Image (cartoon, rainbow over the protein chains, first blue to last red):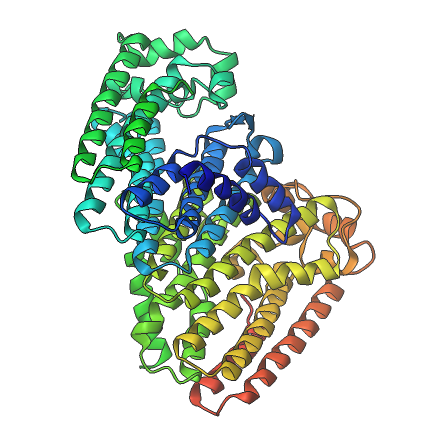
Length: 315
Length: 315
């Protein structure tokens, strides 16, 4: 079975997992899970599984779903905290159903993932549980650093290691471990995934500066409004917290240029974009290098392609 | 080891689980986990374990902690939705650190529980995972019914079965299953716990009407303000949603009597209290009857006492 076919099965599984005894939760969960998205994490998991010699996609697909649902749960909760209105090209759950039901939808997605993972081994459950904790810690560090004006380059890397790379690493380790890969191969895929995750987040932050909301399918320009992201990391936000500026305000009421300049203090957005892209390319190169340990296979080739796609994407 | 001694170890475990790489999360988690609380669910789990013949409390204590942390996570999130200011005699996380960090604290407690449970069997993980989903579903049903004015007696029982009794059932089943009890004994303890959970919630709702905040260590009078609870269930709230009335407003700005009468429409608060108490006693009796299947033991006696305490408590 090709990965693309497995990803189609994944979509069906995601929709069936959204099914709740409470119709409202089914509706909210399907709204966000059914909206597509890039599915980078499940693709990574399935390719790592294949690259590590895994043969039975039926075993790996629920793991891929679990990783995607954890990611989606954090998006639903982040959109409450950020007042985001657009996600995956749709209105956010927060915007459409309000903060209370968005909070409960995120919780529901967490508990459903926990149910989905219960049949798997302790080892696999620990990988995903620890990554989930890291995501929450990374998000907390980010909001705190933005509010307290301590968002520097080092903090930025600590944050994105937790809030993004940790789940990429978990995806690779889940796939490789489920395929019973030797420790050296699990390690290589884990290294690949860490570097890929960092590259992915750097490009995410570049696109937040460079693209518009309709292109991204989510609110653009949100990072500077919240006192975070690559541009803020380069120059620091010690001028003070901007986290209290709601997105709508940042997009409509305040001139984006004025806001950016107040934070960038000298560095141009173009410089931040260039730095972000160059760093992302560096991490993508490291990701690809980590793959050299693995025996050549079509799946390894696809992982190389994925690293290129992550850096070259425009949304 | 007596259950009380095991509960002391549980307190230490709860504090150690709060420990995060992000000091803010350690602080918020310890604030709520270290505030005490009745610990009814972990006590129930440990007694069920003992009543089912379990000998090694070291095996059962982390399970008891997991149940208590899931419960605590839902309290932290509920306090965001209810604008609660007081919980376990302390300021709520929401009130002290704001909604964003309260949301992340609840998420953190969920993911830490998932980590804590990873070493246990699929069977035990499924019990807790399904109960966690039921809690979220019950809370969602409650808010929706209160807003839509469909809070009648039947809905009320469906809601409290999910939002409260489900975790009581999980506590008993986790304890009994970990102790490798025969299916008949697991079933008896599960029945006991379901009825105990319903009785517990009925008394909670009675106290919400009858007691004051300082006695409860949490905001009193919140149920009617939110268009829910036993009083609303008896008379229905089809007059319309009151869920949008914030607690502070209900307690300070609107006459509580006027608000109650607008919802009770004829039934007095005293009638609702009497009905709630009488129903709670009925469910507590059923709980105690379910224990008859079990061989007599000090633990079974303590479970009987627990049913009495749950009904007679004043906070």
